[in-house]
Length: 153
Image 1 (spheres, helix red, strand yellow):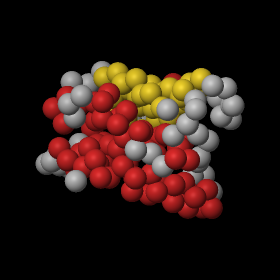
Image 2 (tube, rainbow, N blue to C red):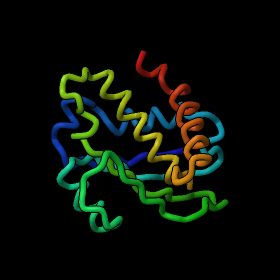
Image 3 (cartoon, one colour):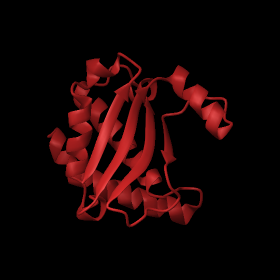
Image 4 (cartoon, rainbow, N blue to C red):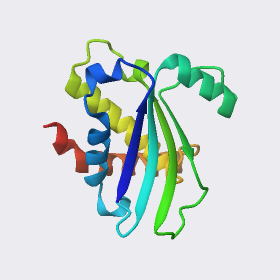
């Protein structure tokens, strides 16, 4: 079981996604079995942010002085076999998700969930530095999104 604790430092998120914590926890409940952490309690924190604040974090932790769509900070390098595990932190920028600005709420949610899945996979150790890793990560992203897209139809 995965529990997502959602924090927001950008008020605009509430205009596009109401009850964000419920949404992200529902998304995780619909993940494929492989990613559900059955018989474990897995936790992560999701910070709903903006370009200005994510740029500060990107500079501080990744030495990149620019904003980005998402940051993921795994708590551990390798997922342990403990019954309870803290996966890490994900930060998503509202400004990236709300581009184009005329995106309706449903498409905004889809876009946000796709990037959330991307960040979640980073917490599990997936990366996209090499082409082979990119293809593998993309395949898993698509598989997970397919299992949750029914929430938006």
